[in-house]
Length: 477
Image 1 (cartoon, rainbow, N blue to C red):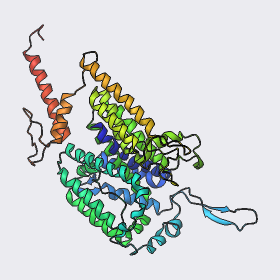
Image 2 (tube, helix red, strand yellow):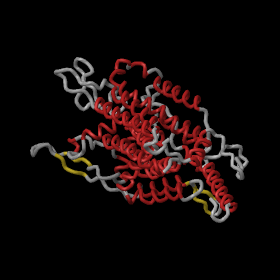
Image 3 (cartoon, one colour):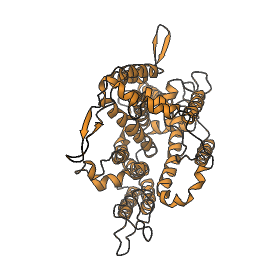
């Protein structure tokens, strides 16, 4: 479970939490109050709304209202004009330094402002069949597409699991089919983005959202994107205003992942998050020495973060978690799977040495390639073969530890019966059959969530402990 949840938690922590927080803190006079409103609305209320005398005000509405009011009241950093000349005799040019979100004049006349957005109205075209005209480029992108496809499948499994833990058991076959069909249909229209189940299920359910919310999102985005109005929405409602809502969703994902895993496994989940952070660092230029990051551990960022760091996060967390739980055989299986993933670039696809994939071509970072040493005179191959050896050694160590465990020289596997049973009941949507708790306390016909199952189990354990204590005489055990 920790291995499956860590990639999703990493995305929530980094791209929905960390990144928006830095956007917020860059413009405190615009985004600071919305951040507190967002945190209060999503974590201090029951359903994401502030209620005043029976009137519910959605948290997101107040966040957007407060942020837009500040944004259009000239409370941003101004982007001042700076004189720029190539040489002393050149005609000076004046450009805006990129210090903040700018003044109202910038919002209207600047790049990405309201005037720019007007030009994009009704320009978008959904051209069916466009994606079939670039087959010659497939070899250049197969190294990116393969890990992303695997990542999409894994994320659908993770989000299905998160829904089960919150009491919603969906049809796995249907989810997988719709994901694949949606991706294929989108590609016919020129989309390069895969379809996967959205990861914000727990927080949306807590706010009372149901299937109608998903349908409303689908139709709204379809209209906004194909009409070109989305650019106008982005110009009027800035990212500094939306960032607090994204941050709350990201933190909710992190909280849910930690709630359904044991604290014993939390240290194993942190390195998985680091892999996703490495991807974020690379996407923001810190892996490039020319971008001012001279002291950044160049090779380490690429080894950890390539292809989003998703597969690295899943496998590394799974092996560490199994080691902590002393489940050595399962840990060894993950290690030996990682050997093959590393050899073919699904994991650690850092082609730092310029691995040759043809007579005149070099593989870019993140592309799937064979990880062996390249023949002379080409440079050595990518980093994958080193990780294949490393995972092989760890896997062999796990196998040895298993035989020592079987012989009684080491401790047995660690199990937490209450936690494991509650998790199993939630995932199978059966509910825990407690001796004194109703399996459906609300009468809604829905199975219990993980939290409800765990509470029932703990209550039964405590009741049994008290019963034994009351029937045990002095000096008896």
